[in-house]
Length: 482
Image 1 (cartoon, helix red, strand yellow):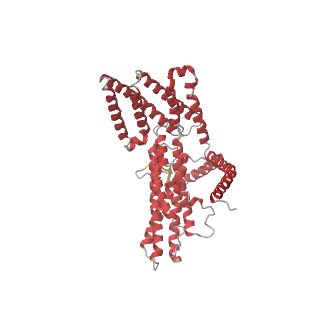
Image 2 (spheres, one colour):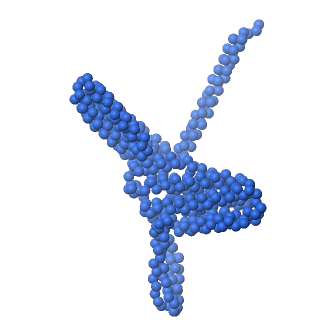
Image 3 (tube, rainbow, N blue to C red):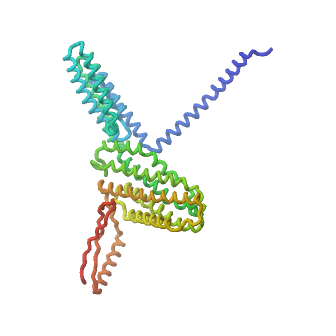
C-alpha cells in the first residue's frame, strides 16, 4: 500500500525538524565559543575597554542610591530616573567626551528649565483658554530655532547634544507644567538629578584609569606619520625588486591604508580633547587644531602613497641604462622622505623638538627631486616605448609630490613643537667621554697658543622657527687674536 503524498511530506518535515533540533546544541556551542573568542580578543586589543565597562556599572550603582536611600528618594522621587538616564547618555569612553557631554547636558538643562518656567508664567497671564495656545507657540518657536541652529557645522560639532537636551527639557517642562502647578519644583528636581548624574560620571571617569582623548589623538597622529615613513623606506627595494633586498614581511606596504580613513576619528578626538583640562604635558590651550592640520597633510601624502602602491607590481620594461639612471634618484627620494617622516613621528611621540637630521633628510629628498627633473629634461628616454615610459614618469611625479607633502608636514610639526613648547633634546656624554672631550679641548687650546692665527669659537646653535617653518640656526661667534 503506497503512502499518500501528504504523509510523505509530513514525514520529511518531521525528519528535517529532528535533524535541526539535534544539531542545535552543537551550533549554539560553536556560536558561544566564537563570541567568547571575539570578546577576549577585543579586551586584549585594548584593556581600557574592560575598565570602561566596569566604570559605567559603578556609576550606575552610585546614582541608584537616589532610589535605594529613603531620604534621597523622598526628596527627588521619580525624578531620580533622570540621574540614571544621564549616566547612560553622558558616560563616554574618554574624559573629554564625558566632560563635554556632561557640561552640554547641564547647561542645556539649566537654560531650558529656566526658559520653560518663564514661558509657563507668561502663558498663565494670557488666561486659562489661551494658555495651551501660548505654550504650544513657545514650544514650536524654540524647537524650530534650535533645530535650525543644529545645521551650522561648528555648532553641530561641539553643541549638537546640548541643543537636543535643550529642546527636550524645554518641551517636557513646559508641557508637563500645564497640569502641574509646582513647575519650579519640577524643574529644580530635574536639574539637580541631572547634575548629580553628570558629576558622578566625570569624577569616576577622571579618578579611575582615565582615558584622555588628547593623548589618543597625539599618538594617532604620530603613528600615522610613522606608517607612511615605513612604506617609503621600503618602496625603493620593492619597486626595483632587487634580489636579496626585498623583505619577507610585507605588512608595512598595507599599514598606510588605515591613514586614509582616519579623518572622522581625528575630528572626534579633537572635539573631545578641547573639553579636557590640562593634564601631563598637555597644558591648558594646547594647540589641538594643529593636529587636524597635520592629519590632513598626512592623508594627502597617504593618497600619493596609495597611488605609488599601485605601481609596485608593474614591470619596468625599459633599457638597463635608463633603469640605472632613475634607480638612484627614485631610491633616494623615497628613502630620505621616509626617514624624515619617521623622525617627525618620533618627535611628536616623545614631544620633543625635531632633530637636525629631519631637515637634512628633507633637503636630500628635495635635492634628489631636482636631479630627477634635470634628468628628465635631458635625453633620457631614447627609443623607449611610450607605454613603458608613462608608468615611470607617473611614479616620478608621485614621488615629487610625496617630497612636497613631507616638507609641508615638517613645517606643521615644527609649528606644533613651537606652540606646544616641546622639549629640546640635549646630547649628554658619559663621564669617561666627557673627560676625554675635556682632554682633547685642552690639547687643542695648547696648540692654539703656539699658532699665530685667529681663533674662532662657535657657540651651540639655538633653534628658532624661520619664515618657512624650519628652525633657522643662529651661530654667534667670538673672535680672539692669539
